[in-house]
Length: 265
Ligand code: ZN
Ligand code: FE
Ligand code: FE
Ligand code: ZN
Image: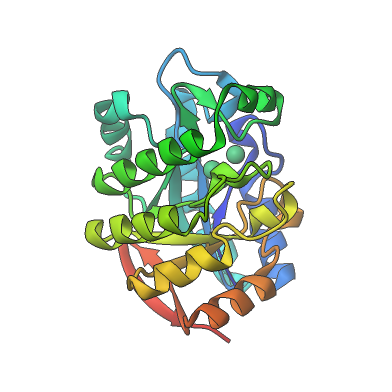
């Protein structure tokens, strides 16, 4: 098993220390574990969404320190980060990403006009949007993020469906556009099992989106987006089944920001 997206208590809304995630990986049979906690946000953002700026160096050191322990229990530990797409703050994000030698940088669209649309506490704000306009806006940001050159992988690529808000028309137009944007930009896309635990009740991306990615030749990674140790490796079988059905027979693992294909079981 492979899990290339997990958090730690440092981000303020997850539980568990780095070493506990490694122990959980060993127990679950996860052989490759990439830490991707939330990159600090600029001043003015809600403190609960990402690790504080003063903890970035500690995070990097803590993951490095656990590599040997991981190797002893059959877990290859990699150092990644999940960075928000903040179109007004590209310089800030780029500067922080240069502070450590990350194996992989995940790019996430969590904010639309400053609204954290995946925060359950802000769910009421969906009422302010026409679903088609929201989807168009989300996928516009997705394409811009993919194109930014900041990220290796676009995480949970159809996060906008988290609470079940779907466009009135067939979403395939958004999926194909996003797949072409990822392909043109040379970024991979994540298959995230987190969606299985959310109101939408399915993988990010949906089956139709995954097929569009496959047709566009976009490489994929797999992650649980675990926010507690017990979620490491979550839904791996489901991800493998969906990938096989879409025509994939391997997934990418990034080391030193270079992708290597690993065959699916
Ligand atoms: Zn999180
Ligand atoms: Fe995320
Ligand atoms: Fe995440
Ligand atoms: Zn996430």
